[in-house]
Structures are given as structure tokens and as C-alpha cells.
Image (cartoon, rainbow, N blue to C red; front, side, top):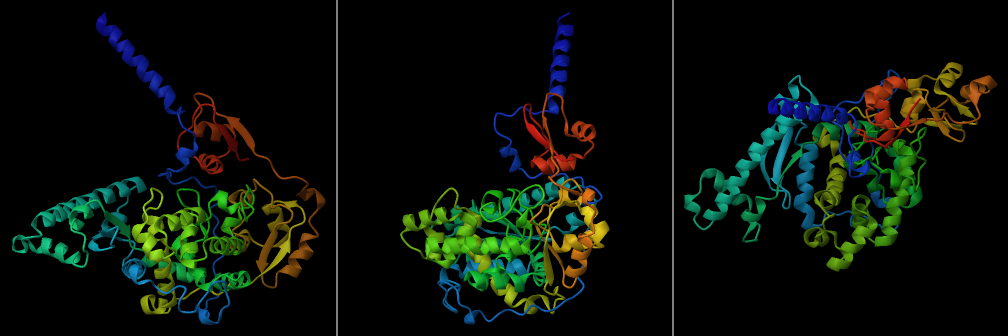
Length: 495
């Protein structure tokens, strides 16, 4: 009897767990989950998989003569000169950009950027397995090498007074730190082992993409009085990939998060100007200019693009200097981590690498500048109607208008009135004539609305997608969530 009661308790507990699996009650807000990148590939509808029209023209990138520009607070050959205290960091990032491939992890010291070892993962990348499985194998391989390096550093620390007792590998590590004066450098270094993936192929592709937008970006920065060297900042942020998205919600070539982007840009379900390189450039120029006016230093203004102007002002007050190298070396803050400390060095490295790209990558076939005309849309109009009556394909519209969201290209949202639609040079006149011929019943007076659903116990993403005739991927993207729901949560259902 006791055995039967025990089995009954176990069975009831198992049923309870199964019923709760689909809806996860959380003691913290859903925003916490948004910081966790989804491992699984998102579902895409057929329309969302339509690629933009391919480039039809190519031209080498010709950098402007930076010395002739007129920008606030700018001194030619001085403003963005590599500070002596950052030379090692800049050299490290240059090697990441033009030497090490995306199949190589560089194990290095995060403070001094000293390279311990190069770990090749090309064999893992070639395996036919899921993304999760690949990441697990990579983590295991990197972990084994980090443990080996940590053991060597501890051994060198204990043997540093007796060089003859060191192995050849230990002596190599000892010599690596020869110019570092800290007596506990080896002991402390065991906590600073970091892995950095090479970026050579991504930087090379970024140069190819950059040709499409750089001339227009340079023009915007000139108009705003912002140094044109900063037009190379997207190489650090996104490698000029207009589809770039970060795990914290940053988007576009300038990687604006929503809260910052909304200060300058239109961001809604139909239009997200963060993904339009031209509109986002105007916002980036204004933000950088504001940072400079607040901090009165371009190195600090650039770092503030990553860390925030208020954060950099605190650093200046605490260290009592505006010298960027001194701040990076001495300022300690929980939020001023590796990314913020290295951001300016990454920018200087990207600037030098791009200006000498033919030396590192050869004569690349870079895309020619995008030449376009603009037409202001007067009414709410669907993408299917627009392509039907104007003979402009979705692929072309997607290439010239990356600021339109996937909801527009899937027909779930209209292009709103007031939106300045970009068209290929020479297509404006014919487009306007065709646009005027669209029947009145084919346009709308208001925007399409989303449906809202309050999650109840037992709801799953799969069930909701089937019930509302949509997909799991669309619900997840509309709400910026992972795999789990929680009771009481309100979801936007794109229709």
C-alpha cells in the first residue's frame, strides 16, 4: 500500500511538471529573457526569405582626404592618432581584423592583449550538426586550452625566480610578459584568459558592402560637422551588415538599441529606420556630435557611443583626466568592462585596416555607391499592391528600403503615408505615374492592427501559431521572446 501511494505521488508530480512545461511562471519580468539569444533558428515565411536584389555595379573605395575636412574639435593627423598607451591594443585588433579567420579563436590576456595560442575550429564548423551542438564542442575545446594555459601561468608564477627549472612552454609565457612590471602579473593573468574569434572574412565582406553606403555616410558627417574618420565605426559595430542584430536588441549597421534610436529615428512595426543605413547615419552623426559637445573629446565621444556619455563623464571625474589611454588603464567600474575598454582601440584598428584594405585583402570587388531617388508615399499601401501596379519588384524595394520591416514585406503591415520610399535612379517618374493609377479601393485609410493575446496556463507558442494562423517565429519576433511563455503575459499576434 505504501509503495502504491509513493508511486501515485510521483505520478502526480510528473503530470504537474508536464503541465507547467509550456508556460513558465517567472519571478522576474520577461525583459530578462530578452537578453538571452535564442539558439534555435527562427522560422521564416516565404516572403521573408526573399533576398534583396544583387548589386549590379562595382567600384573601388576611394577614401577622402581627411586632412581637408572641417569638423568641430578636429585636428588633422592629431585627433585620431593612436595614443602610445593603446598601441598594443590597436595592433591586437588589427590582427583580429586582417590576420585571423572566423575559423580561429585567439586565446589572449584581456588586459594586455598578449596572445597565448591560436585554436582552430574549422573541423567543428564543417560538421553537419546543430548550432547548439557546435557551440558545445567549441566551448569544450576552448575550455581545455584555457585550463592548460591557466596551469602554465600558475607554474611560471612559482618558478619565475628559477628560470632554469622552466620548460620551453613555460619560458615562452615568461618572455611574453617580459615588459609587464607587475610582480603578480602571472598570478593575476590566470583570471584574464579570454577567447576572441578572428574577423578576417567578415571585415573583408564589410569592405565590399561598405562601398554601397560610404560616400553618402561621409556626406552626412560633413553636413553635421562630425569627423569623417568616424564613418568607419560601422566596421566595428556590424561590418556594414544591414541585417546585423545583437543579443541585446541593437539593430542595423550603427547598432542602435530601441531606446537610443527612438531619440532620432522612427521605430514601429512597419518602419525601423535603425536598419536604413542612411537614416541611421544621420542619427549616429547627431549622437556622436552630442557626445562630443558633452565630453569635449572625440576619443571620449567615440567610447561613449558604447558606454554612454554619462558613464564616460563619471570616468573623467573619477580618474581626473580626459586622456583616453589613462582612463582605460585606471578606471574601474562594474559596467566599464572589456567591450567598453576596447571600443576605441577597435575603432582605430578598423580605421587603419580599411584605409589599407588592398594591402591585406587585395583589390576587392567592392559595391558601387547606391544611387537612388525618393518618393513620398501619400497613403497606406500594401507591398503586394505596390509591386503589382508599379512593376518594382520586392527584391529591388528590399535592397533600397531596408528600413521597412518584415511585416511590410509579408503584407501584415502597410507602408505608412509620409514614408520616403527609395527607388533606383531614373525610376521615379514612371513609379509616380503608376502609383497614381492604383485604385482607391486598393489603398487604406488606417494601418493594419495586431491582435493581442493574454497567455493562459497550457498555452504554447506552437498552439498559438496554429490558432491564429501565423508562425512561431513571427510571434517570437513580434514580442522579442525566447522559447518560453509565462501566465499573464500579453503577446502581440501579427496577422
